[in-house]
Image (cartoon, rainbow, N blue to C red; front, side, top):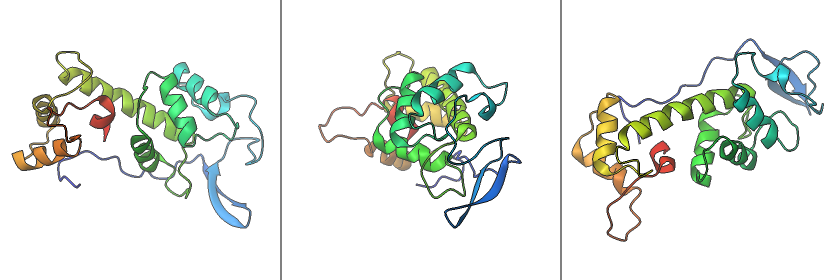
Length: 186
């Protein structure tokens, strides 16, 4: 779906920390950290994150990067987010987040440290918005709360569009649709 007033992160410019390298006959952009080699095993992640990065972000990345590649793939991202308190995020949402936040020139769905920090910070902002409009603290957002959240974010949606969004999460039981945080992210 496309909304003219909706926020969607745009693909960032390549940061200065990227350099183009040849790897297996392919030209790829990688992080240009001193002593970084694509096949090198990382013993420490300290050089991969800026000094201002919250230690919880670094800890969750380190713990989830099982193969020490310096990147998080789908299952590793799920584990990292779970370690950060974002349990129960569906496979569909994990893939969506990977697609939105992945390195723009990388054909693989994976996140490097910079992208993970961006995702983590964005999730914290979305969690705060969700919590602000989940007034009854049920962990669910009903249709009215969702409408209020959109409105206060500057998105005035026609009733038909709002109903269409809510219907995407209807399980067919006839019960009122309540969105959990995972559905709210989507």
